[in-house]
Length: 120
Length: 110
Image (cartoon, rainbow over the protein chains, first blue to last red):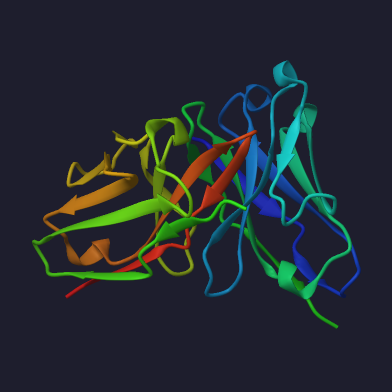
């Protein structure tokens, strides 16, 4: 069974940093692209970025709104992807989901998300 | 900046048919945008319904279908049921490895 489990969320002050994790199981993680999507309370989904597989040089892409502050990485030996968020702003407050790229231009499996709250 | 547009809300009667759309602020949506659709109920993670325009995800009832209608992607629900009441999101591949979600449509079944 495919599972994605996010962790690492919490309360952080503006200007701080946080590193979220996405632990995967039930599929060949190293072959998969992983995306991060966030959702502020009562708002819509926002694609944040993704990381490709080793075969694709672990390359990354980011939404313009987060480029330069967010860094996506992965450790295939741990079947885990990461989202490093720097210089946190109050508008970064959201539930952060990781989702697997199904290989057919879709996000086929989703985690339950982890809540990041940015507040002083 | 690319903006993906969706109707903010829609209402359908039980047993009725509704078509939700997904457009671009500038230009037309085509199959090359690989439109996909996701259903989300409050407090839950999104669920994949449709991908690559019209392919139903595993386990999705055939009352859900996807298409391109005119210059937009479309999600049609035929024979709406009470538990279809959810938020629906489309997402488009806009090139350069970038994806953009629409603002979502809140569907009411009443």
